[in-house]
Length: 104
Image (cartoon, rainbow, N blue to C red; front, top):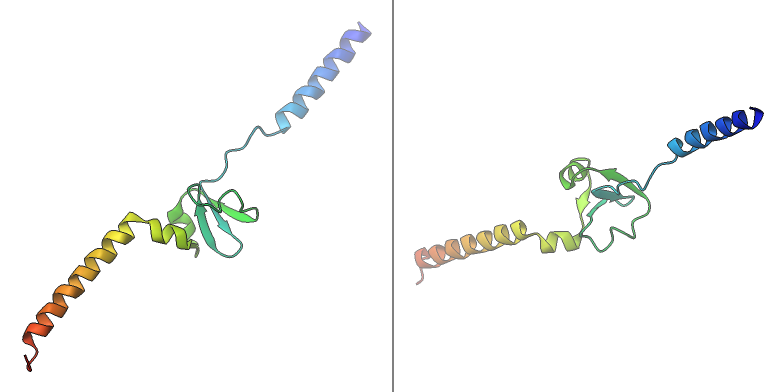
């Protein structure tokens, strides 16, 4: 009977210890480094970033005052499309300006 009580206490303590340990925690979707750069899991620096503030999304990280890494800015398809559209628009405006300029 005494041995059974010892086993019961040991199992209870093991359950308390086991429930207090966290299983492999999900890594954050975005890490904002101490220098204020937001890295998502596609960033080459994501795994290397050790001191960070976790965020659920890139938008939340940017809204907190963070900024995208240079690599993320270069690779963003939307930025590329916007830059191409702006360049095409400026080219068209330049063409109109040259056609209307008086010395031609």
